[in-house]
Image (tube, rainbow, N blue to C red; front, side):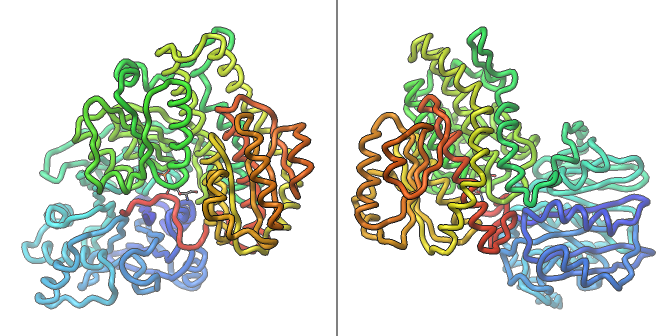
Length: 613
Ligand code: M6R
């Protein structure tokens, strides 16, 4: 968690750093801070809260300087206050450092440093790290990069850091291990950040630092990259295909709403070049070289967290239903700690929007150790998961900035549908005519999503009927069960209403006790199979005076006559229903959160990319 940004060049650093921090705020917004270096003088500005509060608090200060580092924090060690905000400064006020990650052995280091006379003003692991670098630097009169390198060989944990030294102006030292760091190459100027979003406005030429690499960036020589063992590296310069418009709200009030509305386009982008209706084929380039191994897999394990875990569940239904390969879905955080049975005959699919989720990364490492082939389904190009997996496919959803995942979910499900179709065709587990029908149907999903979005006004009205409730229940069967889970997660995370997702048939085994006139029940009732059962479930809710909001297929008269509110979606083949049925649930949670006055894009306590365990 946390976002870091740095600048070295000839322009004023402050506005570049502030804008960069605002782009990175999705990673944390407990506090923000900037350190500037000017004429061998370090100036530090820190404030609890969002970047805007830092801007206000520093508005009367001198903010001159052409070199600086900045940080936006998601608190792990120490309260989210001014004192614990980054940048942290060494005792002699010579070094300033920003950090994303956790230094696990900080307590031991802190004790040892205190014995040497170091005094700490806060509780963070980061303050310990900068004192540790200072101690090493001063003891042997080392350069900044050498002190950083030695210090990092003695710490355990995860980090992306940028450090600067008052006595060495014109230089930034950066390093990473298990937390991302990108270096942007401008014309005589350099930008460093947790991801490319603060950089893309100035340059699209970037270097993704690899794990356990240190970069020394100077105005004279640009970035020089070395390993922790001091071996020189030739960094790969990547040219990014990202537009600045993708990082802005484009006329929408919130990123989340913009991203919901982008879905007809992002789903189409995910399918582009991967499916041909006329010729009747589906192809995933990332799978080509490994197709035999996946087709012959003893089983597939899908590991993910949060919303990506929900799309993993839909992946299980798709792959088992169409390709008849056994699939298990695991929370990445559980997989890594429970001594699982994984062998060379298994294929592990890791799903992640950010490509940086620490638990998913750890699950991938475990799967690799056990000899499984690991396939990544990722959105962020060049991210750690994209690089750690043996093979994989991007979902091409573009930057997702709202903390609540929307377009990444539909991108992941689209990718899993393409994969299930590829495997099914190759294994001959579905007929050619059914395959062709599915391919045609999938290609038409973007227009159907656009149609669902036309119900926005009605969904907004329904949101008004739910906004003051304290609880909500989401029910779905089959392919719609994971959608129920996803709908409940969306509501919880941005409106703070307690919500549960359940398989509709499970309601009678417990949750039915909760139903009374205060309980809204959102039923995803689009299944052709088990339709009568869903109708019975709705009747059970109505009999107990629960309020029913039903998502149904256009033209459904039976449920429309029973439910309090109905939202229609176009008809589609059952395996693709989640791509349509999730859209009203995304809009519903958006409007409810807005009506409750919640911060839709940056909900409390959350961050977009969870890079800590
Ligand atoms: O970047 P990832 O897909 O690996 O992130 C996983 C979860 O942290 C993420 O889906 C989270 O649950 C979102 N806030 C859901 O909206």
